[in-house]
Image (cartoon, rainbow, N blue to C red):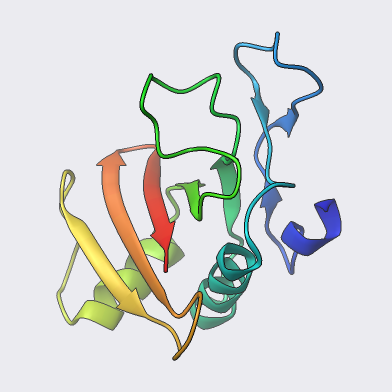
Length: 129
């Protein structure tokens, strides 16, 4: 539901998708697994920043074969200086590089590991496991 994602100062970066005919400008998160919500929440609490989800389970907007799908623990997160610093600090490096993948362990159990792919200057493609 919306309230599970709209935690602290974060939220959804676009309006909710209302139909499969929407081809852009919307994000769905209602079909994320609970482990994904847990992982996002732990990252947000750890970085003390506003996490903004810009992509979720709206598979029809993404390319064929996408990992964005119903029940898939995958989201896109808006690039944010505090989030970049959090990831860099957790993996022990001074800064992040575009095109690289970084795994952050936020806690034991489901949702406890988060893989950030620094896909482009605007966002991270994130898998929670």
